[in-house]
Image (cartoon, rainbow over all chains, first blue to last red; front, side):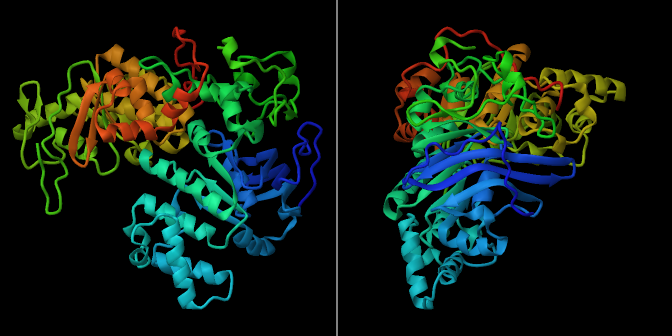
Length: 346
Length: 268
């Protein structure tokens, strides 16, 4: 589908935070999907910016569109989906305007990806070492011997024990954590500017998750990439990210430095998400769950999408969609009636 | 009990007692032996030595009929609701499967299924639907409903919420708590997630490489963990780390008595 510029009074925000620091800017991005049940926009006017060297946590529940954002940025959208609005600017160049075929070259060199299931980027039929060397040779004229040496070095960098021997392993012979390390190695082999990591630690045991998150931060310091880290878990974002963007129903509802947003969440949805964490609830007592349900993407409210479930709702919330506006201190908020958490909002 | 194999024992001299009405969290990472222990408790795996008692019944040497009776009293709910619910069967059929031994008429069975769905806060309309039509949280509720069919007194839950978004986990934990009070259940929650343990357990038992390395009441466990692996697990839990860093409590100190308000019943 051709890229149609889609301007909407309701959704538009042109990156007030765009600075020379911005490496990747997503501006009013819209992705449309043709499903059997109808046409939906899982990403509906998303604006984000990723600064050089930072890790941005993109947080939201399953179905909010965060993975679709990742796929759009990495140009891995399925055939039934297409970018129908907005821009994805990497170093000023609009990736959304590229043809799929041109994007392949850009993607590998500039954007690396890691997914929750490492097997989605690992071929079960080939040894791990061969897959890494293949990735190396795809990005430059390198002799096989040099590629192998580089691959071993990369495995060591990602913390793989006994890297030379593991080169000969098949993916199924490795544990989940080791596969994820291989996934990271492949993603970083071309020294990309941006790493898109979609729930990379969700399926891992907790101590392993901690190791992978620490590894990610170390690699970021060593390689200098920026990363978008996607997860449904605010606590993980707290551990790994510098800034956070909270997503609901295809849109960003709040952004800001991680510690600020978690200490002082302003959007009622962010507050609800925080409160719904079992680890933060009073032990032995019920966990406050966000009431109601996520709206049907085929039948979205006219106004704010969180309004039906929102404890703060006021008259205008149902009538019109609030804009994502600056809210002080490098923060943004899409809400007509925020109140601070400590004032005891139910 | 112990179960040595050629390479290393899956379980080493594990002693664990589950008292009536309590919730014990069996905590450990992959390979710790927690799932093996659960299977031994259900006699799905025969240990090389040791015993399992359910009241006066010696489970490991029980007769076939005694074992069948035991298995009705002690039910298990698994982590992956999609895996344990046959995708080709309607929900009603899946739930009724667990109650075949009761030899109910189809009307009685349907009534009982509706009752079970109500217990887990799902609409009777769910009976005629298929697993794929439900969210992860709803499928977990269905698995719980099915496990409750034979009116068990003990429920083993193997990673009951790990496959769910954090925001939905609370609803299932609240449900388990509610059911425990209503039905006088005893729980063994098997998990690696300490935030779940923190919210729902009375006692904690930690497994590491096949051995039970620590047992303690929950508060004591989190305030003064003794074993290095316990400390490692607690330290690695992101939400507990976050909890200690947040200056304002996320909830008011006095519980508001706010119950689970998620409305699953209307639109599955």
